[in-house]
View 1: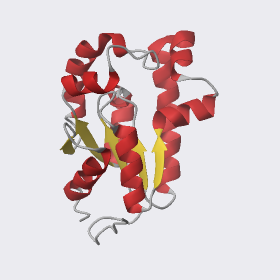
View 2: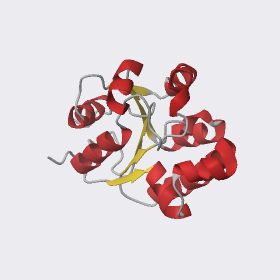
View 3: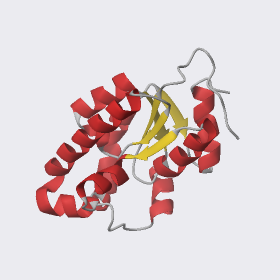
View 4: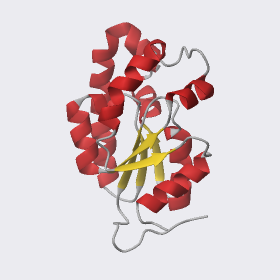
Length: 178
């Protein structure tokens, strides 16, 4: 099912999805991009592709600050590419908006949607631990610290009990695309 953007929204836009790890940014982003006939970019996957290193490797080599610097550089590049044409759906990393400069870029250059998910749902989705997510061990503290940052997104879609396709449809609704 392809959806066309109405005249009040640009056919050349970037839709960014933010939220805590495990909220469904990547799976929802793919479903949303398919509906819009848009390009899909997973920021974490893009970082891995551009650096040739996994996220845990980057964290181990330089810590969170080094990772955030690589993330910001990749975000800038992806947003520049997105502005060149077509619609792009961008799944951000769970901590991308914790950096003020990254947050400003996303909020000024995209239609940002927070995929709000309860911590209990995230735990159900991810299990007790996830070695591919370097900050998972401190999930509860991170969740509480990041919620006010995610809340700065101008649009919110709740994901609890919804499939990625249902969340994608809800995003289309909040963007006025259906």
